[in-house]
Length: 199
Image 1 (cartoon, rainbow, N blue to C red):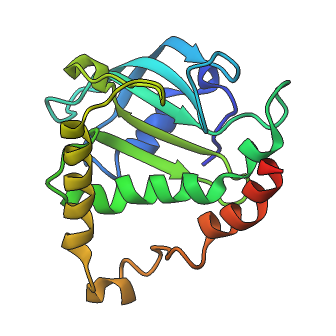
Image 2 (cartoon, rainbow, N blue to C red):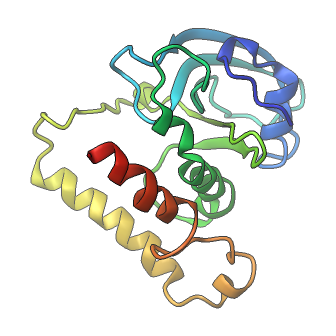
């Protein structure tokens, strides 16, 4: 499954290949890119992003979100893209795995996911989720006051995730891919790339 560097190169067939294993019977028949949030725009961080509208094929389950956010890895060849942004494959793989394999079993407030795919060879990924701004969600900056109540809700959601899987036997089975804070792609990134950038 080839993930292109630009959201404008995405196709309904590619999105269907990502969505259908997560939502059986779902197919994407049309894709309209509403806005591409490019590197350097000031509103993206570790991923490129596009706001899009989807049309679904006949026979798809009802209630699927038409307004979605497409998260993609940055194009390493794009002018202005810092090199360390292109080395976040551990984060990308974890995000896709979480939403594909863990999120469906959790009763927490989190974006609805239509699926994602990470290519370990090219390090490129695509993740499709509902546009939560349509439900009134906002995204404060580090300078904005978020309030104690919001922090409590975030910690409560994190606690539910950890409590659900605490000392689970599944970490020796279907969840053996889950990384610890001592090993894996994210840990490698934190110990190798981040210190160099901080200098």
